Image 1 (cartoon, rainbow, N blue to C red):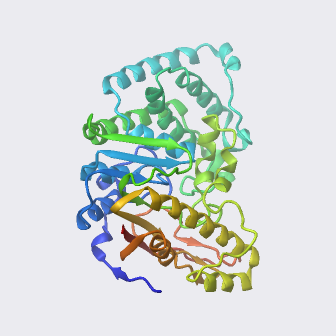
Image 2: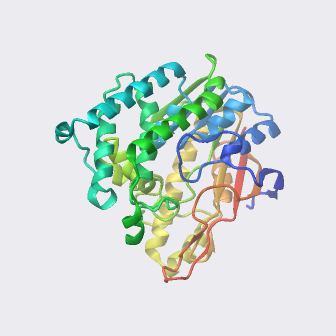
Image 3: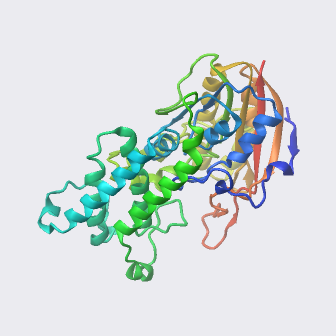
Length: 410
């Protein structure tokens, strides 16, 4: 069965960015534009009740929910950095306490820097190939900040200061900042790279305070409950009025490398499995057999004809997505609506119809497909080209359009 797809330019939001409505407190790959969710809720008359995002990332869906007037929101993610970003954005915290702690932290750090003999006594997190990714000067600065931030006892306050610390880690490392995978800058760029860790960090704190106090804080009223859980999604039967999510477009290894992007930050945050996160995400465990499904079978078979291992990797992703949709379906109330924003990626010159697969799976789980909206992908931060043949210099466009699958529970 072919599910209806409608091209709707109203959802393109040309010349608009994330910052147009809800500037993010921390960079994150492939973030959904909050404006899309707001429009979906209005166009499809969603009830202003409870919202679920089973793969919440940096929390774009909650930005949409806040603007629309949702009062209860729940998100899940197994990337510690993603959970830190979401929790910090959507936790009500006293601004004056943040400003006081910033001034106190600044004084403490600069006083400590004068006592050079004490630096060697500070604990150093286990960072893989630390000298490859950071200069000795940067390591020293990060080590000092790490020590004093982790001495903050209040969890919400500590998270607030860890977020700009994470941004500082990336901005002061030798990583190529325009990439999401872990690539080191050229030796020429390394030789000219000399960031001041403390200047970067305290500027990031000021930016974070400004955005949070002007954008998020005013909307976090006592009636709003946003709970972000560091775990895989767990079913809560017949609980949510709506689901808004942008799941991974494929396994992280070959699409958007959420784990690689977060690796250095997660290691400095003390996550000992930071380099295994991509393998823990959807499609991370390679399947032992090809995925059999009416919609996907032909496409996966065509890929297997060229590269069987690649077809098994793809099969793993659809296996996991199928199981996830089954769990999500059980958690939605009768007449509740789901919105899945997905890109149909191309592998071995074969486009995978993920939007059709999602519609089919929801219909198999007591939902009716309402429509699928096709929008131009002009404002999502992710690789624009890849190398599907692995031949040097031969690249192709990845995903130029997104598909928004809209279904309603029967």
